[in-house]
Structure formats: structure tokens, C-alpha cells
Image (tube, rainbow, N blue to C red; front, side, top):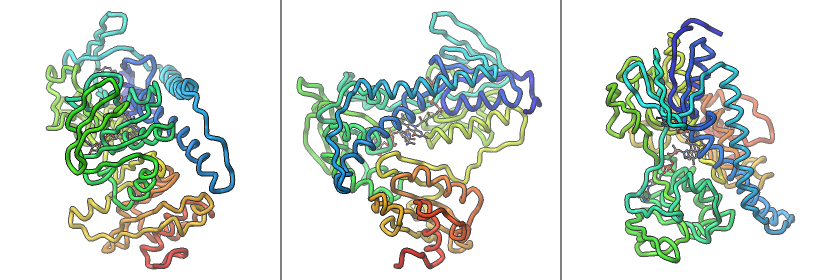
Length: 469
Ligand code: FAD
Ligand code: NAD
């Protein structure tokens, strides 16, 4: 452990996956740290209202679906009975366990944890409004803003229990008979699958021409095929233009490719998130924002004010927990006086639907838009022994390589169960500057889904053992 900058006092505002790793790393580097957040323990959106509760519910959802599908294998189980109170309690238990653990880790590092809302007083101090109504002024040598993001609301959506955002959807108050998802992105599709498996009739409306518009079409295809069976309707190139509450539910007007009106028990609005900067009084200190409202930062995550850094969702896309954590550690190192830079070659994105969709590096669409001459190779999971033993030949593993540079790996995309775990190999390959040959000649365990990466790499070299074009 280093003590190179001991005595430096760092204030971290927001204890999500950007803020708490920044605080922990700064403490590990010998800095004196105060971590401020409204919750009793660290965790942020990710642990309290995001990644962790949604993945807990998706685990339950996967079990329900798999139990239903086992009939094809000659194993028939009775239709699962859902005890919603118990399911909700299990989810709360997971949150409590993980956030409580973070509280312990914070104490062990002798971090001062202050519960409350922080506002900048000037470039070296914040005022914290505490839950008991008192205020405390805390001075700092350096501050890290990690205040995250919040859901974007539709201006015409009525404020009522029937219109949910991701936080209220995760509360799992009931199982609506019919549910409309506005937005076919990460949140809509993940939570839509949860509600569909619990018994809701789910429809989705997406304004672009495809679900998950940031992902390559070839990856989305297997998911879209499954959703066609699980969801009641998928309306692309369609917008919701009005929502009104009636006795029977929310009356929704559509315009675009799908026109008309329909009534739903509940609606989940998941049209993106915006950075949380209000209430910080950034204007007092001169921290500048970009045109989309994100805090502008340099390669060390320093803002326009030299004593103030920003990390995570509040500091720009992609709004992902692991990107926030990486930035938090970079900011802590910079404050400790270490040579450091935020310069990832690939940030993995994972949509935890069934099948999972995961990708990193350049996408095929991005390569095309940039006019870049790339080679794309696919290994269909129908040719994978492991996928066949799992009854999941619908997946695909794809590599995007640079044919002019020894088939250097530029992007990896995977659709299929476990894609989120498999993508780590692709991310490492890109970070290490690997070429397809490196993956193809690395011995992968058999029978596993990881072999699909090896075989996609073999395809890039012109010969795959189990797939002949
Ligand atoms: P946050 O986690 O948003 O934490 C910010 C914290 O700062 C909050 O606790 C907030 O209350 C606090 N705060 C704000 N203002 C102040 C203030 N003035 N004073 C004190 N405290 C303040 N990402 C993934 O990578 N994988 C996933 O599976 C995933 N699933 C998700 C599912 C859902 C439903 C949602 C909504 C998001 C999901 N995300 C996922 C995104 C992920 O949650 C965010 O990218 C991540 O939480 C961002 O971390 P952060 O530290 O920047 O901010
Ligand atoms: P998103 O950007 O993933 O998806 C929003 C979707 O809504 C887009 O496809 C967009 O085209 C569509 N849309 C926007 N306005 C619309 C309108 N008026 N009508 C119909 N469609 C409309 O946003 P999200 O699902 O709200 O999630 C927010 C962010 O949280 C994600 O971008 C991601 O960064 C993060 N997240 C990550 C995970 C994960 O890593 N597994 C899970 C959930 C959330």
C-alpha cells in the first residue's frame, strides 16, 4: 500500500459503482477519504435500484422459463406458483447483503461515511444536508463527483402507480395483466422479460427500426425471435404520443409504423437516463457541462475545475457500472499523484436478457459508418457441441477483425446464454492487441461455449473445425 499522498483529503459525492470504488482505492492509496450518499450504505443505483435487483429477478425469470421449456426434454414440471412477497423479499435480501458488505469494507478502510446530499460551496468545500435536518461543511483538497443518473420521464405521462420507471418496476408491487414497455433498450427488454415470465402480457414500443439500436442486428436477431414468442407485440418505428389514466388502465396513443390506441394495466417508461447534476450547485464553482448535460472531464477525469473530478454516469456514456468503476479508480490514482489515464480499448456491454447479448470494441455498424474495411466472421451456436447439450443452438459468436493488420481483433459480439461471461475473453483480447490467430491457437476447454470464440477466430483465418461455409 502506498502512502504517497497521505494527508490529502478526498471527498467523494455519490456511493455508486463509480464513487465507492474511487473512495476505496483512494483510501488504499493512503488518502484520507469522506464518502457522501443519501443511503445508509454504499451501493448507488446499481445495487439499490439497478444492476443487482434486476439481475436477481432475471435469475428467477430464467428459472421459470427453463422449467417450462424442459417439457421438450421429457421433464414436465407443474406451472410454477409465484409468491410475489417472497420473491420481493429475496431481492431485498440480496441488496441488503451486498450493500451491508460495502458498508463494512468502507469502515475497514477507515473511510468517513456521511449520509446526506452534498452541494458545492466553493472549489474546496461542500455543504451536506443530513437526514436529521442538520448541515455540515466539509473541506477537501480534491473532490470526485459520482452522482450518477436518473430515468428520463415522458412529459405527457401521468404521474400515477400505473406508469412505472425502472425503480418502481423493480419494486414488483404486482404482476399487471398487461404491460407496455416504452423503449426497447436495456431496461425495457430486461424488465419486460421478467414481467413476461411472471405472467404479464407484454408489448413493447420502440421508436427506432430495431430493438437495442446500439447492438449489431445479427446479435439482436436471436433475442428478437425469442421475444416474438414471449411478448404479445413488438412495435418498431413507433412512438407513444399520449398517455391518459382511465378506470381500466393507461390509454396509450401510438403513431408511426403502428398507429392507434390501446389500454394497458401498466406502462414501464424506459427511454434512457440523464446525468444527475442538479442540486450540486456546479455553477458556483464553474464545473462545465457538455451539450447533453454530462460533466466534461479530461483523460484523468478532472473537470474544468482542477480540484474537482467526475466519474460514472454523470461523466458521459456508456452508462455502465463497470465503466464507472474503472473511471473511479483512475480519478483516485490521479489525485494520489500517480501517472494514470482513462483509455479503454473496449468497454463490454451486456444485456442480461435470454439470450444474453454482449459486445465490446467496434460494432459492425460502427465500422460500416466509419467506412472501415473490416472482416466479420460468425460462428453459429448450432455448430457448438456445448450449445446443443443445452438446447440452445440459437446463439452466435462474431468477431470483427482488421484484415489489413494480421486479423487484429477490433470487436467481439456474442448472443446466447452466458454471453455476458464469455465477452470478458473478447475484451481482454482487444485490450492485449490480440489477433485472431492468438484466440484460435489458445486451447479452450471442451465442451464449453468459450470454444465458439476459438472457432470464430478460426473462421477469420479461413477454416473452422466445426463450421464449413
Ligand atoms: P449511481 O449508481 O447512479 O450512484 C450515484 C449515487 O449518488 C446515488 O446513490 C445517488 O443517490 C447519489 N447522489 C446523487 N446526487 C447526490 C448528492 N448531491 N449528494 C450525495 N449523493 C448523491 N449497468 C451495468 O453495467 N450492468 C447492469 O446490469 C446494469 N443494470 C441496470 C439496471 C437498471 C434497472 C438500471 C437503472 C441501471 C443499470 N445499469 C447497469 C447502469 C448502472 O446502474 C449505472 O451505470 C451505474 O449505477 C452508474 O454508477 P455511478 O456510480 O455513476 O452512479
Ligand atoms: P436505452 O438507451 O438502453 O434504451 C432506450 C430505448 O428507448 C432506445 O432504444 C430508444 O430508441 C428508445 N426510445 C427513446 N425515446 C422513445 C420514445 N419516445 N418512444 C419509444 N422508444 C423510445 O435506455 P434504458 O433502457 O432506459 O436504460 C438506460 C441506460 O441504463 C442504458 O443505456 C444503459 O447504459 C444502462 N443499463 C444497463 C444495463 C446493463 O448493462 N445490462 C441494464 C439496464 C440499464
